[in-house]
Length: 330
Image (tube, rainbow, N blue to C red; front, side):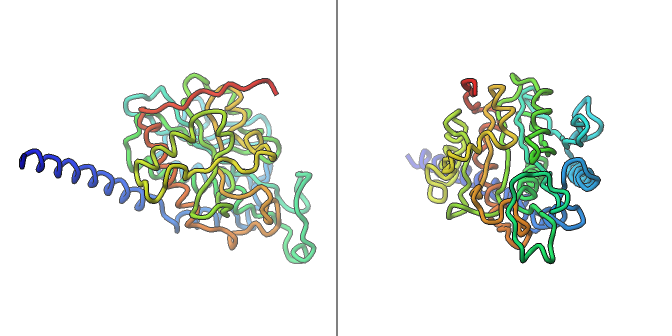
């Protein structure tokens, strides 16, 4: 009896030690200061907010590619380094971590890095004017939309590179052309083998929170069981902190967000592809001159990244696969 009790206590200690080590690794790789520095650069006035087709957009692509290189992401065969040429508009930036035991099964993590330029160059038909701001500011800095998503993408790349234990391959894609009609992701979706892609998580506008307690939401959750898997893993990791439904259902169904971001082209191929968001599409700084770094909650972004690391664990390690998406013609 005593021997059985000792074995039980040892097993509990082992399990808690594993959880602690995992949390320590997450806390060491997901750094608020790093997130801040990435957004500070991408949302700077000097980049004229990354408008697709401009020199500043290309400079942003090179900045992201250098981050991928420094982290240790590998280049994808057939591309020009980390760059995927998108017709005549610019470049998607792509890096990969090969899976240990299931390298032919692919998880895509993504975010778009382009935005809408300046008052003079902006081609986007809907943006919010602010006459008082326009006297001294004409740049749509896009700190939340979507430098926040790119900062999360880079943080995730760093974590998985350091952890070095992904059983499936993870592809990291920074898309261009999202603001012009998801052009970069539409191009990229044509290049992938849909049967090889197990799941896609896209990150868009995660720097200002709609919900309390740093809860993100996921678009199109009714189309697959990806949200269920993420929430299951979060609950098993820390039931007190996360509960059973930490990642919320999209509360803005009328906005059709599932179809408006870079997951859509992949979902159209049957891939369980969804976007993780934190901000309301009616957010007062959406497509506004004041979407600047001062409005960003960096801890929120860090917590969203940690949520995905924990929630996607069984997808990354190959033990869970989300159900495929079957969509009626639109």
